[in-house]
Image 1 (cartoon, rainbow, N blue to C red):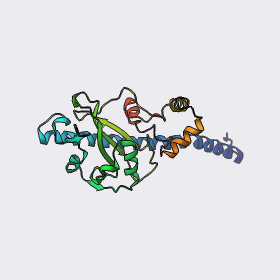
Image 2 (tube, rainbow, N blue to C red):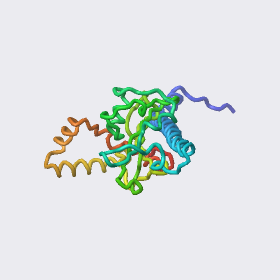
Image 3 (cartoon, rainbow, N blue to C red):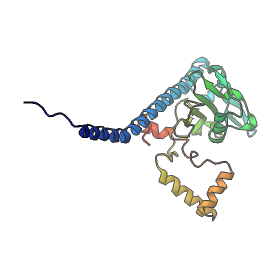
Image 4 (tube, rainbow, N blue to C red):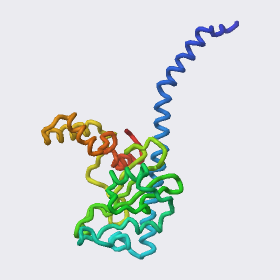
Length: 245
């Protein structure tokens, strides 16, 4: 008994179905893979930052940033502050100029200032990541400060997408050189409605329309597409190193 062969039409239909399924699933598979690459590099960079502080503590025989050479000088003529430039000797990397794309991003989102520009705290590491350090929320009584340093990262520097919450993040470091976990954080990518609610509330408080608010923020150089995503690192950390947005 001979088995009936597939007709050309049946083969074409089958190939068509496979093509449709692939067209639907392949973009999701690629996107998931790309997210995995970014998160893997992010985890590597975060470990690098934490190990840098461990190196400082080990060399200086201290257990707090506030007791190290990283914490000295004057801020507002009376307040000690975190000195990002003191980390330079612990980090090998290419210095970035003030006009570099990452430096501009770090200045806008990381708290660094063009008034005290020092290229040694805007670096491209050997693995292609970019990193900068700036002072954190330092109180007069620094022992009660929430965090002493702000770290801004771009896990692939000059490569895309160059978007906050994708390959760019902001991380806070406490007095013990560990990650400070804020009680709340902004990650519009994980909760777009939160962004909409806050913008609408702000427009109402100012007595202007939503369109007028967006124009005002645009004129001030605020990128609404990314400005609320810089702290998405905490969403990834909360989800056990997964980018679920």
